[in-house]
Image (cartoon, rainbow, N blue to C red; front, side, top):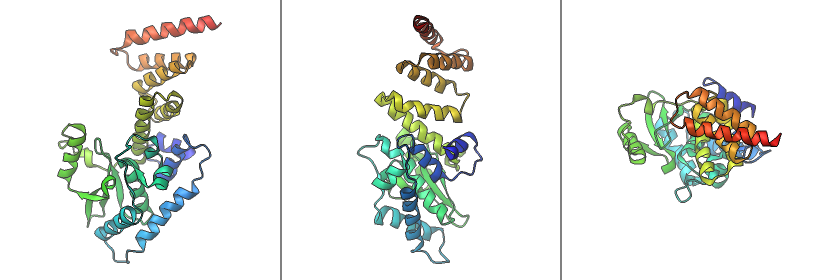
Length: 272
């Protein structure tokens, strides 16, 4: 997982997004063969290139990419089972041809990268998008909905419809995001799914990666500490919960966490 760890640790890291996300998928699929998903991305790019001539502009690329990805190969948003964890693993998304806004955007970004086209991710609150921008042609695109083009105003309306908040006053909302941002957002999606399922063994490596990216995040230490408690990993729970209190010196749950630490101390003492 060298590429993934490097990308999480450094905002400026040049690790390819497809490699990093496939390494993330190895959490669920140990020993995953990267060959088939990378070949699929290559195939999508090659088929897109078949529709373009040397003079093709940005609008031509978007039309060709949308045709290949969403019409020929029928990639689509998984609206019926949105919280299926497979929607967050790139190998599954490429094999099943369905996913969530974030992973379908990764497919679009990687097809564009293979053709040297300027497409980057946009971390809209509640809904991930991509933007094509070569200075001559610009467009916001929604891969979850067959690559439909959106104006900036429509992007803000979409975010408000999903989250209930108006982010239009924040100019950074529509700015390009880094590979590290995309990976952290993927990890947060998986964390939420596994916590909802109470899949403690599966959420633990996700939390480990989030803390690799953000070692000073008090909340992630708290969450990991409580997961360690669920798994009866008492010494690890004590370390994380102590770290949480160090990083968040005046949290609202200080007394509750202190009580958990006393409980852990008693349980560890009983083992000796």
